[in-house]
Image (cartoon, rainbow, N blue to C red; front, side, top):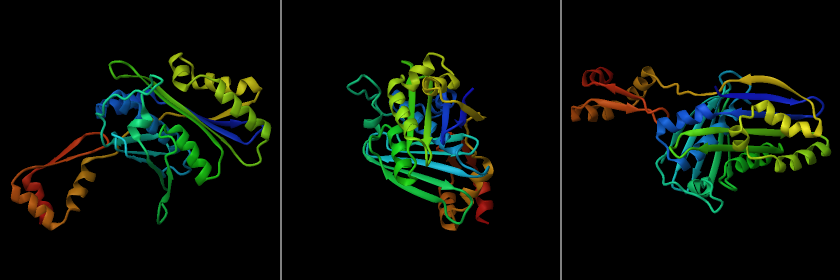
Length: 290
């Protein structure tokens, strides 16, 4: 079962989020039939969105993380909520397996150059919208850059997905650490050094390290005490249903519905997030038109 630990240091204004999203990323891979590189890219984005989702304050708040690059994978859209539930739409999940010079799956090449957009829907008249350039297209660095530029919060972010030869997901997860205002410089210096010393997140997860093990590995060296405030269980979740699909069909208008009837064929509506299909017969469409 996936989980996200949310906590903070006892004596310093530093908050953190540590996530294991292996089950959710495997579900993403299964639904979209992703190749290894597509799983690595979309899995990182899904993990980031789930972490950012649990940072939302209200139960009904929503977050969208949109990556729009010029690489072969195309546009990726992930939405999440304050419970850590997320879903993902990938424009081209069947891209070739791309490998970089280090022998790792080349997420940056798959995504290419482009922009990242964060949309927070908090029930106001208009959602909060912020767009930044992709500085590396490796996602973790881009998330940290977003927080530094858009919210002026120094942030450390690490994301990873380890894919087996059969394309299944061995492990996936990540962490996000934020230094809030008036934090001692010694803590900032320690974190900058310590993060460079520890292994990649996928290596630690593969070695069966729990989130608390990883937290201890980061903060324990400096004897920093912390408290866990929440243990959240994120999951891949799509909230589409027949009623929503019906409302979409009804919203097409008389001309579009008339054109559909003229073809004398049933209408099939497919969800891009979970691949479920909703079928509407000729008689139903006639009813909508009436």
